[in-house]
Length: 360
Image (tube, rainbow, N blue to C red; front, side):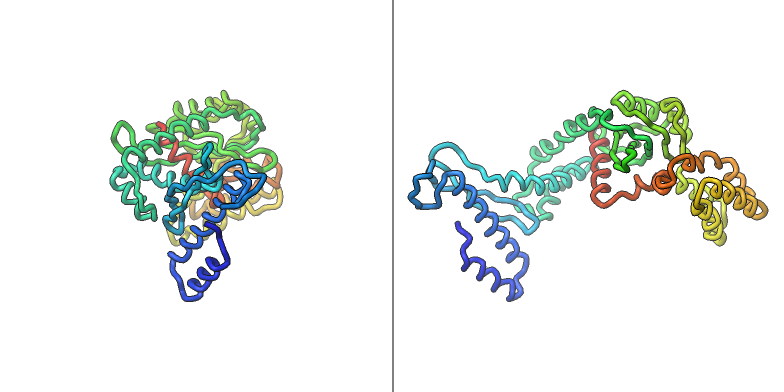
């Protein structure tokens, strides 16, 4: 089928008349079919019924192909050739659509959704053909391969002076049961500012032994040049960092610290205390940061002695960022760069968590 002017005009008329999603689906179908016809013409060196010296093959009918898109299912005709085979590259590129659908299937499976319900879910997303139990299993089998490649890749291509460590708990399928597992993630930041997820692992709990094993695996894959590790005040993680990254400083996440502080403060005073602590991080240089921390500690001591004690005890760990370039401060004084990713990064992080649980 060739995309002729009448097709376009008819489509435009339908849209002007208030056409719904079927009009969009029809438009997608017309464009995709036109691209397929253009590619097969280029492949054989001649249009349909054309006599040409450049012709190298002949059409031999077509086969139907149902393609799932965001606009709905579109029916395409794939030309067949008398000699050899032809498959349009546009349908190879549509694997991006497949991957989005596969990601839904994988996540549903990992979170314990039955294969029958996965089939219902796929149908609700617009794939009229649904998905079989064997297809769900085949798609999810790719989790192991993707996770193995991710876990084993080298980290020696660049130094990462800053490393963020964080953890979350997710439910995953283990031995036929859905249970809660600890998923730990390390993200590195190069001197250029570029970030890279270094690795993730799954365990029953994030104790010192588990964190130590995980961090050593990063070292064995080539992680080098670590000067500062940023994390919350998890004792097992802190001890593991001290053992594995000897000579590196440790930055206590200010966001986690603030939460700990506010848990000791009445709700009526929470905003005042939080505002006072935030002034410490608003100073122009390291000297003023330290002097402001001392002033805030003294100011809060009479009314909130527990908070003052926490500030005094955590001073060195909380202000470790001041020993590094000032341009980097906002990026390294908390694990927020890990928790508040750009939208596409959040999707990637979620996918890594998912793969980690599934591969455990």
